[in-house]
Image 1 (tube, rainbow, N blue to C red):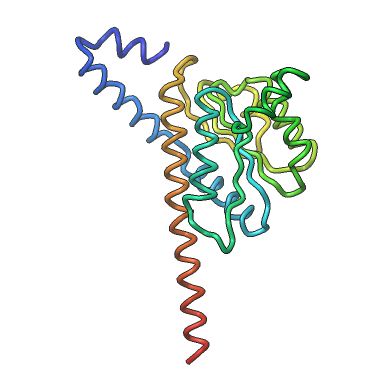
Image 2 (cartoon, rainbow, N blue to C red):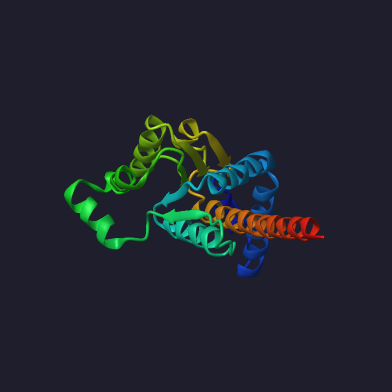
Length: 215
């Protein structure tokens, strides 16, 4: 059963609904697989170390999350000397509408990846249902080309949970888009917070090494 329907039915007023919604969100966050989150962070660090690109894809609210992820990782980590080359494939309206118009909406990500993706690049798919045809096709292309893939999912995980190399699953009833997308955004800020600090720690270690070698 959709937990939001239950919360609404049991809430006497909007304030109680707000409390129950927040409690539900806390439960979902507690249930996340921390090892999978750690694995995701390691894949991002590996991509940076190798100078590879990280492509984020998603639809609707998840498209906005893809843009937010790319911003927070590429720009928010503030590592200009050795950046995270994060790109959201949801941001170029001209390309998306051209592909959707000419080839069909299910190809909006594959066509871009066919042009941009190189060996060693990482593809991160964000989808509550895990069944969006354009996301499924994109991961299939990445897998066929030997690229690593990550899926941020909800509900029962959908098709992409079986496709991706690494899955971070927010287990909810079907249709709980809000809580799933909330958790995905928390993941964005959690991952960005770690990466930014890891980059600063790396830079500090390098400065200390240079200083010690100079004396």
